[in-house]
Length: 229
Image 1: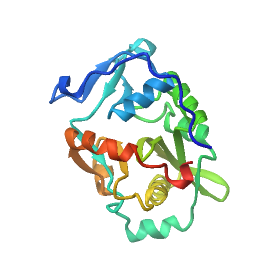
Image 2: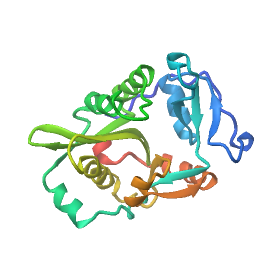
Image 3: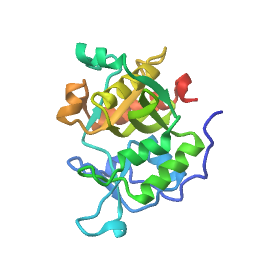
Image 4: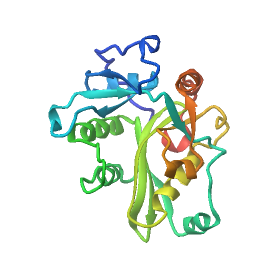
């Protein structure tokens, strides 16, 4: 079934022309209603709590659009020989254990955790409506790793990933790239927010914010890849 369109957002995000050219944070406030989230991703933004230490649930929501955006070209994933061998031991599934995936990504024992109860609830609702998806690596009937993100047309905005076994999250990423690599692959956008040394080793590159925003209209106009419909 196609994704269900939610009620439009009651909020208006700042125009890109008004964004600080040197700051990843472009807005504060609003809510996490489905319509607000979809509007944000369609305009190149994503939410993360913006509070300082100790603020907890009182922290305002920050809306980010990195000045240097991390993206993974679908033909640029770096797969070592050892990773390719490891991948043979996993089964890739899509959307069979979304709640377990987001809970593993939000495990409070992980350093720098940012998935609050409010964010968890918001993305569970977006998943129910058909806009958020998990790609999972299973081994011997157990969930070994995975990732989740927002899928709008040809945009897949990755949010978080986890692993319980070596290479499992990387194998899930391989599975996602395979899902997205259809006849529209050259126009699809796989967004990972920021480049990290780990993601750079897998082929993630940085592009200027303006280039990322310019790529969105064509990507959003594409159909979802078959496995995400």
